[in-house]
Length: 424
Image 1 (cartoon, rainbow, N blue to C red):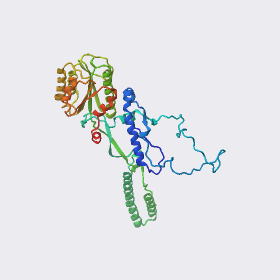
Image 2 (tube, one colour):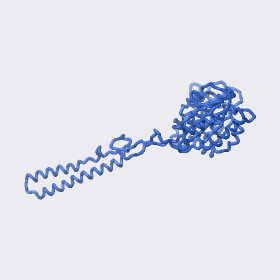
Image 3 (cartoon, helix red, strand yellow):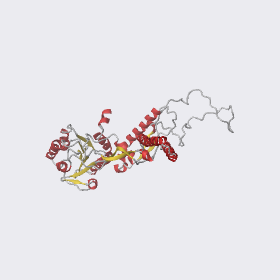
Image 4 (cartoon, one colour):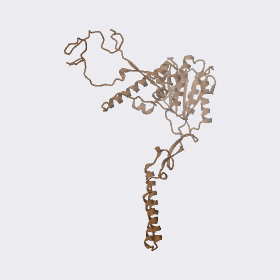
């Protein structure tokens, strides 16, 4: 993740707090500008990064300074071929402009401001986009089998990189080795000296004396550090439990969903897909398309298939229920669902059945479920009426949307971090 670096000179650090405020304002302006990318282009293209224009007015650093247009001033200027010391330089005629730009002046009273562009990478884009978002009510349910590992300290090893050298332990090893060797040599030396004192043979004494000198030399030459003293911090991989979650994406592709409604739904699910891929390492996504028939499909078919038909919503929720029973143990998985529809159901009976399935069978199992109705009608659909009756239940949210510009505010509201909500 990249960071904004302020390279202006500040050798004495007098304006450190102002600089921090400046950086925060830049980041805030980038966050405000990013959602516009969703409206201007495809989300998949926007997630590759791009250029964000930031109003200069919002990021200027406040400071105290003298107003150069007021007060009495004495200015000393170097002379040239036109002026000499003591000459008075006339003021420029009014209306010639005071700025440094090369453009022509204008008498337009409207106040404008320059902008500067910030080029951000894909990772930076995603960081700013999803920094304050999370899956609600995510619990630490672990998968029994996981390939994820994390390095943990596991004692010391005799081999390793210099960066992992354990100085204190190596020093202790050195001291222990010196004490052990010197102890053996000292004991040997005492024995030789005793033998030398008790011996009367000249040749034997000479031999003992030579050996004594050799042992004394060995005692002095015991190295302070030897390669066998070195110890390195050892790390071994340990299995790391991962919070596991599955997201069900249910999209209505019936004939009542026009091109505009389907485009909104696909943009929302694309944004959700990018969010999940960015924020969570271990998450599964189940795609379900439905008209009169519900079918689990892969990513390609979910976003690109042109299959359509009548509208019965309940089969999609039943399919989700059956998939949970078959593949996702409730004790191991955090289960989420996002459903998008224009609210058109075959009958009120179908809408009532959907409400009952969600309330009685799905909500007790899922961590969070969101319903997105793509509809600008003043009249509430059967589906909206029935879902609204249970929207106060824990873990179930409903939203209406119709314009592309509304996608990001709605998405942000559905997945806003609780800690952020409390502070705002």
